[in-house]
Length: 126
Image 1 (tube, rainbow, N blue to C red):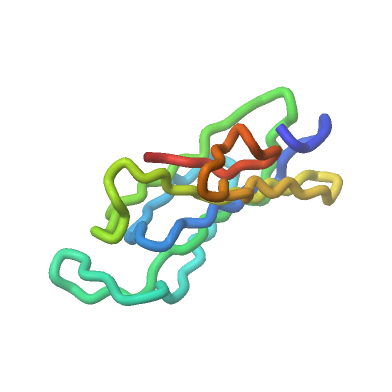
Image 2 (tube, helix red, strand yellow; image 1 turned 90 degrees about the vertical axis):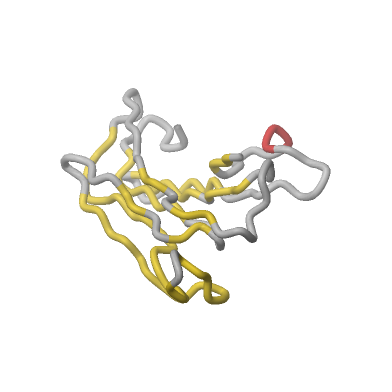
């Protein structure tokens, strides 16, 4: 979806603040990159202060035909107490196409709106 008939060659998933120790599942034929950077603040991760980790996952260097689908799997291993139960958490995604086009699934709904109100909403989980 998003490449107008051409293949997807790269997929980037941003890990939201408060989700730490994320672990991606490798995908056959795709190169996997774990982008690490500083968190907005330090978190207690099983008794250890943690202030940096995986903030983006990138699968690239392969071709996913437009008439096929694939699953790009990762575990949000630890959700900090700052994230409230029942609150929707958004995972912005950028899809890059063979022809250089880019689809940005990054429109986080404003208060009072939902994903159906947007053309390119991000992946969301409760």
